Amino acid sequence: MIRLSRSRRCRKRNKQTVIGLQIALIIYLLIGLGSQLNQNTNASFHDVERSSFSMKAGTKFKDVKDVNDKQWDGSDLTFKKQTSTKGKIPESLPLFAEVKNHGDKMTTSKWKWELHKVESSSKPLKDGKVVDKGTISKEIHDGVYRIESTRELSEGKYAFKLIKPKGHPDFKGKKSYNWSKVIELKESKEKESSKETKDSKEEKKDTTETNQD
Image (cartoon, rainbow, N blue to C red):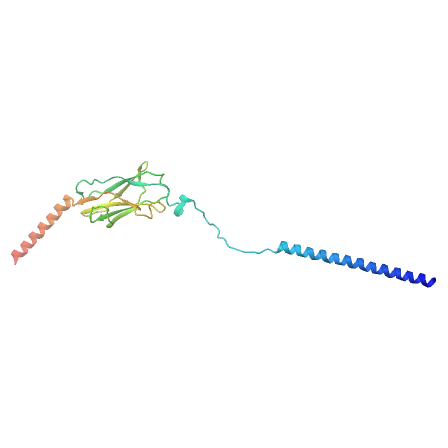
């Protein structure tokens, strides 16, 4: 009986030990599984592809009307009045033209002009020799500007050329400029008389030299 009781006790102890080991093993496996799941979750959150690009500071975005850094302000000039074109006029008189603004107020646009000595008055006019040029700035009254050339000019045909500013819708086309009417100059009476006097003196000189021979 004593031996039987001892054997039962040993078996009971061994069974408790096995159960304890099994419980410990299950706990260990659960801890390991939880740790593995946690690592996979963190990896999924941190699995991000990185890319880089550069930007230049001070980049200026422009709207449609700001073409070419606002060089065109909406102004639109055309010839209104100029030196008389009826017959020949004395070359001693300064040539002028007036232009009228039919668009917005001129603020930032640079309208340029040139005075050409042209070979022919036939249209369309062709570029000739540029004898004078400038920028339109002299406003004589609301929206009207004056161009004037005080250069000493010789006999011939002249025309003002009005050049539209950058940004103007016509700037890159065939209508990027306008021509005034052709002005025809003749020699002034003073020059004619001076030339005649000079010619007569040279003739007298030639005659005197011939007689001396």
